[in-house]
Length: 370
Image (cartoon, rainbow, N blue to C red; front, side, top):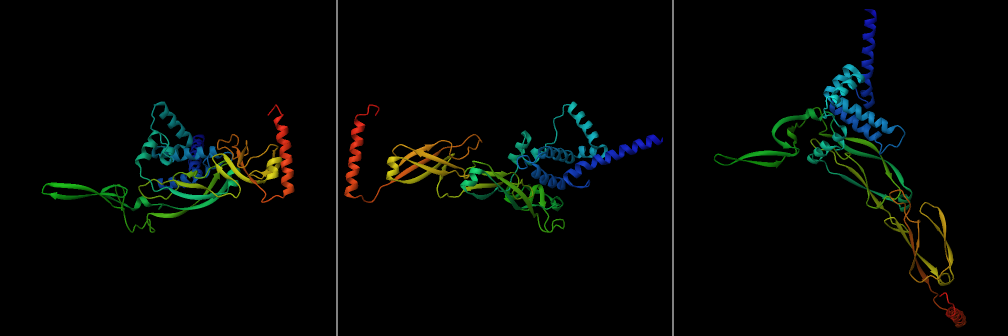
């Protein structure tokens, strides 16, 4: 009897400890409502999402968070987990898998619209407007890449907003109500009208609700990391899905940071290529020159020209443009030269120039290679 009691106590303790793991992982109590679980999952998934958190172990943590959320949002699984812990839940899931059931809960379809059913729901759901925020970048930042830590303030649903709804069969969906009007004896017409009090089919917002004293939504601060990768282009957007304002009956839209390229004093960009115009003196155009240049990351290189440069001639320098967005190589630099002619030359200089060019033409006419 004693050993049996000890064994039962050990089982009970293991169940309790196992039951606490998922709740601690999401940072919630065992009495948390579905709304509180969703909010905690949203915050944790944003924090550990592999696209935004490159730290070692972040992807594993993200997977654990998703599994915890999936289990706790399913009433049956949550009940099994609370009674029998993770091991009991694994046995239950194994039995389900053996039975061939395919109706598992998918947190990605709930939050990100992945999967077949998720895509269908996403198409049917109304969303709040997307938010586009311009983010100015220098050409140097676009060349080398840049990371920004920003605080964004948005509106999220009141924690207990579901308790502030009352039944109203006239509501056909968010912001839509049906009004019945008699147009003739025995004939009744149904007309759809806008009614912002409607938050879902058959549900209307209860004004002056004590559970949401400040209204349907409240402010929330979230910390975001914007990773502008090397080679990012003007007009390109970095998107945080489902991070726009929330509203009852609506799915949150996306938050987009749209890149805006600042004008550069020396270069202008087209795709992966850079373009630069330089003015050179006539003597350099005729005799050649070496030109020291700097790339946008500060690295120096030298361009040496031995040939004669014509006015408005363009020289292509391979591999000295912008990083390609694929991460493989660079675009090219195209340099256009404008020749600066002297305003005046003396008679003596004219005479010497004629002699020089006369000798050049004479020598050139006898050169078989030309």
